[in-house]
Length: 277
Ligand SMILES: CC(C)(COP(=O)(O)OP(=O)(O)OC[C@H]1O[C@@H](n2cnc3c(N)ncnc32)[C@H](O)[C@@H]1OP(=O)(O)O)[C@@H](O)C(=O)NCCC(=O)NCCS
Image 1 (cartoon, rainbow, N blue to C red):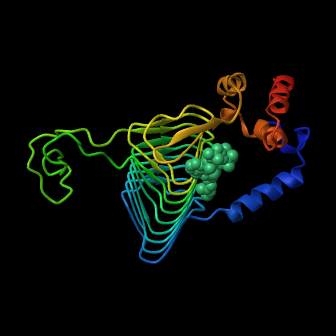
Image 2 (tube, rainbow, N blue to C red):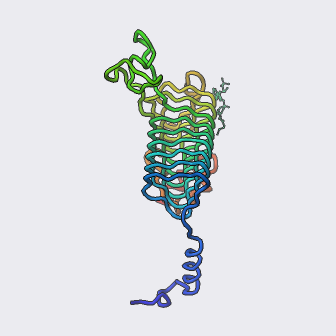
Image 3 (tube, helix red, strand yellow):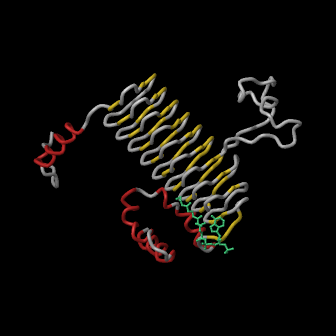
């Protein structure tokens, strides 16, 4: 067997130091007072769960922080995720480096890496891509009622028993339709996105918008109902961005690209991609 000292480029003292440091830094999950874990698969080391939280049938990765009064059911949360106080997650898949601020209610949703969601989110049945920035008080999905039935009350069309009772034997209207939000989408404060809508990659939704139609990639939309204000880039550039899918690059490449990402000349970015392909 080759000893560590014989591997070129590795300083044995530093290697030893890193192992000892990793050993002492690792500690089991820290649970606040009155926090309960019920049938949870894996709750990894180094995660913190605030007081009065309730986790059921979920798995929690390393370095995850969950605030107080959180109810988390049937959800899978990867490493390095932050979840705030006073909220509920039900049946979600949350990838690493996602942050969700206080007072959330998120159901049947997948959230991809490097995305943050501000406080007060109400999201049902959505798929949210990477690098999305979501402003406060968003409402996504949350179901429609029929506009052309005799009554709009779910008592007559839904098995969900919204009022604790239903008069139907089977579901008579499809209430909830999935919403798909692409990658690198910025959504301003107080936006409503109707069920069944698709938001293209790179789109911007202005504050206060009510989105009732699909939003094309790299469009900026705003208003009630939301209309296209302009496109962020010309057609050719949008096509190139869509094809290259930079949001799937590895972390080293993204770090190297940082300074061409944070500037206004799209051609400088496209040139950098060409030169570094
Ligand atoms: C949409 C937004 C990104 C601006 O985009 P922009 O292309 O730079 O817009 P401009 O300021 O050049 O305005 C262009 C037009 O859009 C209108 N507009 C701007 N924001 C709008 C909005 N939220 N809703 C409707 N119309 C809007 C402007 O009035 C202007 O209209 P005009 O051409 O008739 O004068 C910005 O207004 C916005 O809503 N940001 C969200 C901020 C926010 O919520 N932050 C907190 C959470 S992260």
